[in-house]
Every structure is written in structure tokens, then in C-alpha cells.
Image (cartoon, rainbow, N blue to C red; front, top):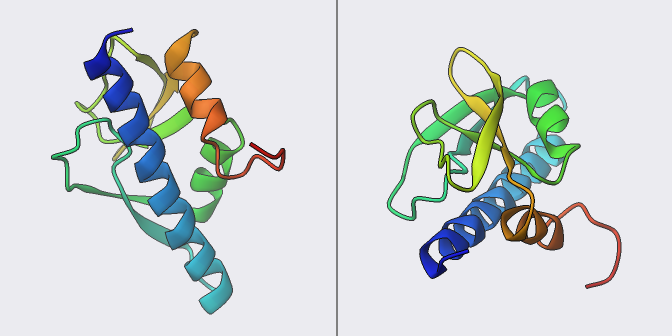
Length: 114
């Protein structure tokens, strides 16, 4: 894996952390939140796009540590593949090897100590 590919994988993990914080605040502030406005979890550190997903869609993606939410067209085919497409976003899965390892190691929902 190149340094550039590693950096993109790390960026995606950082964006996932931001979205976890947004979900946490929404879940604890208002019980009636139906959709979340999240940052695109693509690996492009210049991306400032938002993605709207339902709480159920978000939770389904978070159930798999190697899955991320990106805008259509923001897929990095060298480190991930599309596992499902939706009207406004795609769910990508990190490819086996270092991209998937980074995703699992940085999973904010992992209960195991680092």
C-alpha cells in the first residue's frame, strides 16, 4: 500500500469518527431524529460534502467496521469496492489487507482496548 493510499484510508477513519459524534449527539439530544446529515467518508481530505442518511441506514453501515458511506463518484477503487448503492450515497467496503486493517483498528465502536 502506498503512502497516499494509507493516508486516504486514515482520512476515511477520521471522517467516520466525526459521523459517530454527530450520531451520538443526535441520539442523545432528540429521540425523534429520522435523518442525519453526515460528512462524506471518502478519503479525499479536501472533500467537504455532506450525505443525508436515515438513522437505520447509518446503523446498518456501522455494523460492519470495514464499511463507509461516500457520495457517488467518491469511491476509491484502489482501496475499496461498492457493496450497495442508494439514491444519494454508496456504501463501500475496504479491500482486504491494509485498508481493511486500518478500518478495523480505528473502528470507534470496537469495545476491545487498543
